[in-house]
Amino acid sequence: MNSNMKRYHSFSRKITKSCLVLGALLIGTSSCKDLLQEVPVSQVGSQYASTPNGFEAVVKAAYASLREYYGREDAMTLTVFGTDTYTMGADGSFKFVNQYTSQIDGRLSITNNIWNAFYIAINTINVALDASESITGLDPALKKRRVAELKFLRGHHYFILVQMFGPVALLTKGNLTPTKEFSRAPVKDIYAQIIADLEGSLTDLPTAVPTGGDQGRVHKAAAEHLLAKVYLTKGTDKDAAAADDFAKAATYAQNVIKNYSFSLLPDFASVFSQGAGEVNNELIFATQYTSEPITNIGTGFNSTTTSTVTINGNQTHLYFGMEYDTQAGMQRDVLNGRPFKRFRPTDYMLNVVFNPADRAKDSRYKKTYKDTWLSNRPGTYTTPIFDDTKKTLTFASGDTTIYIPGVEWTREQRAAKKYQVLVPSLYRANLFPVLQKFLDPLRPDRTYEPGSRDFIMFRLAETHLLAAEALIKQGKAADAVPFINAVRRRAAWPGKEKDMEITAAQATMEFIMEERERELAGEMHRWFDLKRWGVLVDRVKKYNPDGAPNVKEFHNLRPIPQDQIDRSAGGPSKFPQNPGY
Image (cartoon, rainbow, N blue to C red; front, side):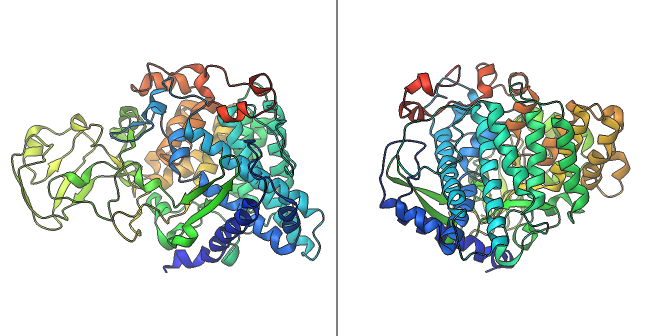
């Protein structure tokens, strides 16, 4: 077991055991067919949550719900795909999500899965919060801390739900008996609950980042980071905005930057180092994964379908890869991963966000995209060869087989190389620059899918950009500049730090839109960002040719699961579908 596995093995393993224990309790209970009655806790289950050991187990089970969202194909499809910066590669069953076709409706499995997973978790959280009032034998300070953790998780889940779906069912009490009485609460009420939960958690969350067996638990800085994003998003929502939202967002973001011990790492690439590097001074909060199968694969019970839900490791490493493994001199290996070819960067991403003219000073293109493959299948090849300046290729083990320069080369330049050169004019659905920050070379073999790297949810570079955005929204561009420049200086090649700095005149929302993606590419922010800025439709039309023909304003919300509508008393009149679906 490497050092990274050791540092969170205990808490992560306890999370899984708690899920299994909770699932065992629930399997014996009523299996009513009410979607939001996902976890109909029986009298036994309620009593169990009221004991010190049971309460602790249920809190750990609530944490496991993060692994059903972060690093999962469902959520990645809904946050990376269908934006201005990523479109579809060669493979995958959900291309229509990127294309915004009529197949996106209330039967869409990936939205349904997220809805179900979060409402299962919310009910688990609510049951635990209800039970906490009567628990005896648990240290009062520890109980307050656990309650704060639960409130953070509930606030987080509702924040994702309200951004995706708009008005949703707002449940703050555990469902102990079957019911079909659900309705969609106004967006402003949902935000009020999110803020009440998150701000209410601040008093009792620890200031220090938990370590040892508590590594991975919520702490105060994580709540303040999330509050910054909540207020920033709320401030752009016509149904919920208040005059002081941007000011509060800026304050919370600056609190995280100034009041804790976090710091930007000197090297952008080291943020994504796997192993011990996943615990670093820039990391604020992450969803934990591990290489141990019994820990990585958890099971929860869904009473709606009387079936189990499997949590199968961090899947992020699968989806950004190109088809390197069928090319001359190459075969699939652990280092380069299993290339599912789901998400392909758009021309806008590669040529505007990562402008070739800026790459001599900004290291992030080079450190974000893999550009070189070394032969692991030596020999002489006449096929397959995509570089049309070559008729035959011969490689010894370790020779360069593929190089992606990121800019166009002449035929003469390519012909002079003994390897294939993949230039922009040769990019296609199965051959394109590969996002490398999520590759997982610690998997035990080349076919193994469950990834073990933690999924970084919040990191300090984003906090700086949230602070800057909130200040720009208030007309304080000059105040935003130091936060932007801190991120950009870190991204500079040595000696180019001054060249990376911007002025107040350059600190615009357009600049933030590009800078966030230079820094946060693929990290499950982009769709929410475009929605928050009110530019989703415009950007997809301009920069995503696969999505441009069909995207409409109603796509700023996802469809409510049809099962939820059908199983609510009053049907669509009481729980209506979002417009357009």
